[in-house]
Image 1 (cartoon, one colour):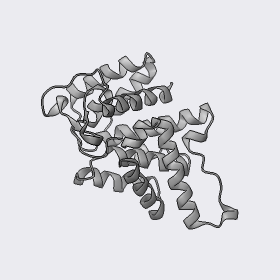
Image 2: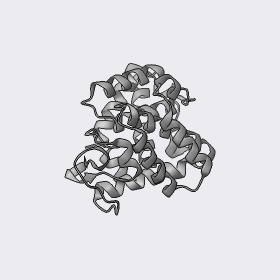
Image 3: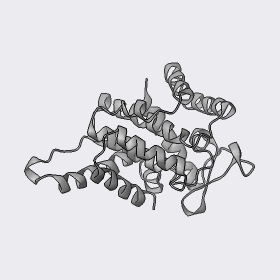
Image 4: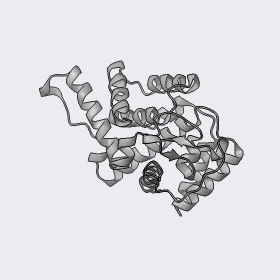
Length: 226
């Protein structure tokens, strides 16, 4: 599966939506046609990413991450957060170079992409808004973005699964991957929603994130969304 390619497409779609260049039409004021208020008041709605996020009023993947490089930019933000955390915890002699997605060869980058996309889907489901009709529309949008049948089937299976932070966290095979997954989740959720905040808390616990790293990732997420 080329998960990284699909994730890149989703980030590109989000960038176009934030910049107002999307050709995807939206209508109505709620549900599937709901408008997502993006950076600078831009309308974020429609397309696979818009359908996943529903009517969230959260950070919408972070303005800077979408505008300045998408998936690679997420890696850069995760790298900065992890580096800052290491500086707080270790001496310079014992620090290792964080292996975030922006610094990895293709096979490892694909593994990270798979984990990040699982985290995004999970965070998008945290408010319970994805019903059967929305799932069908999301599947149709994903089919437009990739011709990989196995990837389409995997994506649909992830949408259909009951939300389980413990299961999602199993995808994190490295601390950097856990950091990227949590960062992506923070950027997706509506921080004003009790359900979604609770989901983030449990995801962080299942990812075994140290409190200092969790706080650093949240701080970088706030800056990325500014």
